[in-house]
Image (cartoon, rainbow, N blue to C red; front, side, top):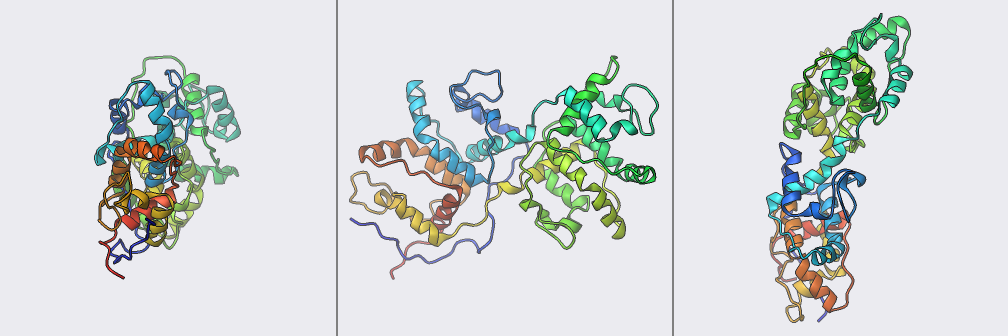
Length: 388
């Protein structure tokens, strides 16, 4: 029986509305799902672990929630073979576990790489830091940076730099020095150099928890960032839409990007009578995490295109044609999913059954792009079919 696309009464979200799961307070919580579902049996996280599949640190999980949901879906055939060989059951996921796991995978790039002290020394010299600062003694215009050795995270260096921004800009102007700019990894390298360069001695280590993107969203408003960049960083009268900026990078990389625009921002804020925002290190981590997660929310899909995806990728062959050998439940227009994480969880939990049905009919696995999954989500969110 040929599959047809039913005519639907459209009750989907308004056009242009974004969709996505609630952000976690601690994105690293998904590590527990990663381990409890035995993902680590095949995928290591860092370089020292045994892994028969790509290590997460070697892979960039870029894109929105449904982009990553599509990547998981496309991973099903290869993963199922590995699980069968290891005699492991298919790992089912709840909606909450799905949201937590995908957020964790997305968060890995935020953690960055270890800094390199030799490269950091070059940064210290090339970016002009040595002209004003010493490390562990010597004459300097600015404060000695040795005390920063208590703080292993590069965000401590970023926070100290940011909070002294206006004073540094004034001194640089007096001395005819242009503000330094930082590239990806520079702050991590600079932090490693400072720790190595400082003289030995008893120093209490101050650790930093991962950023909380929800607190970061509150800080974005409280620190007056929204006055220029708009509510939720989506663009305002003075500043750009930050969700359109490439901020899927390490925490120190985002902090470096903020600093690279700080001189211009300082001038604009002074013109508008806005005070320079200072941060504690945990506040900076929270704000950076909020910025990092901006691209995680999906734009609304197109239900019309989703109807085409439903047919062209073979969904209608089982889920609309009740006479099919491997018939599944009706999906189109049933409101079977009410959130992106519900869609990904339902697809994932039925993937092993679907694989057997697809192989029995000698059909290829229906791979999806993130855009197709967004459109499919919009289609399945619609009201029940009505007669033409």
